[in-house]
Amino acid sequence: MDDFLNQHKSEYDAQVFAREAANTAKLPPSKKFKTDENSVPLTPFAIGARSSMHTIRLHEKYQALGIPQPLFTYGGSGMEGWTVTVSFPGLDAKELQGISEEKKFNSKQEAKEALSKRALEILEELENEGKVKKAEKGSGPNYVGQLLEFQRSTASPQPTYNDYQSGTRFACLITIDGHAREFGSLDSMSSSKKAARQEAARCAVEYFKSQGVWPEDVASVGGIKKKKAAQQPSSIPEMDPASTPGKFPTVASISTSSPNNMSNAQQVASLAAVLSLPTPEWRFTPHPSDKDFHSVSCFFKGGGLHEGPIGEVRNIFGKKKAKEECARLTLHYLNEVRERRVAYGQRMMEGIVGGGGEKEVLGQRQSEREMGGVSDEEFEDAVEILRG
Image (cartoon, rainbow, N blue to C red; front, side):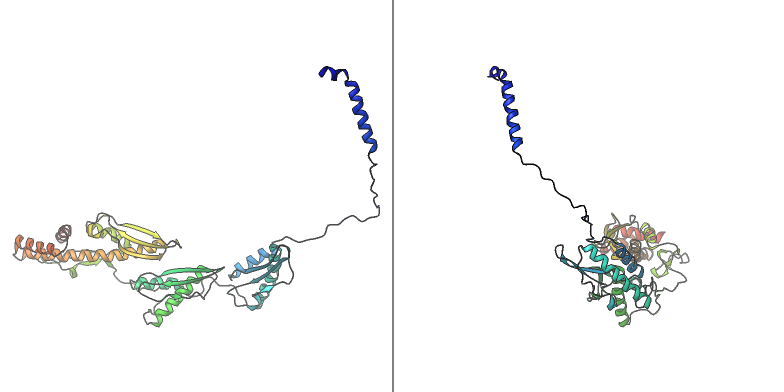
């Protein structure tokens, strides 16, 4: 076959060339399109505008005034066009509620920009007329601080702030252990969590005032003013050196003065050493929904009956304040422990001095043990305190 093709290759190529020439001759001539030299060229036309200038300016304006954030509500679709309405929820200005445009826009962004421009013009006009004023920072009483100090001054549990949100608005309800009712209202919406908590705290303060338990000497910007004492009570009692020989001091004769510069936590650590307790351990638990609120308990690891938790406080605003409040309650607890040990040791020593001797003391000790009294360690500490 290959030999045959090689012998007749020239004839085959001639036939292929003739066939291609015949096909080319059959094609119709190409048409030439005529152009009108006087025709007007196509001109692009506007289909929309994209800008965020007025949206940004409106954002800066309502933030500067401290008023609620505007709420944009959209309608329509990409096929038929978009409509939009803007309102300022919670703002007492009818002119700024339900602002809308009859025109339909090609995009949501274009609609928002157009409504922002109109809302900005109305807002600036109301500002010039004095109908919308800038919120003053720090104006009005600090109800949150007042309520916090009031609860601390009465050794009561700290309030729990429960925050709620609806769109860009916030509300708050306060619950306090020992009070069945809640303070605040979900109908009273504010522009921020801080403002909502202030409103709920105000309701609680008004309630305590109506009950006649609110103190008169209150600082409007912070808490309750405390009268400065000439000598602060101490958590670490000292023995009265003026006690006569052979006569053991009573609990009432123990001095209770302490340095003014010692915090409650420092006094707890010092008193724990006196009572032969381990170094106090403060365990913090932040609130799951708000990390600014803390629950704290004090533990004495290996402290036996006094291991803990002691002085537990819940949902205190600020880690430092939470620890100080827990330390205050722990300090009160340790003072009671010391007083019990001193009183018990005094009874034991009086039995020895009074002539009962060791037998009477051991008998009394056995009686205390059978009745579930103080432990051996507390008994030894009580005697050590009296001897020291």
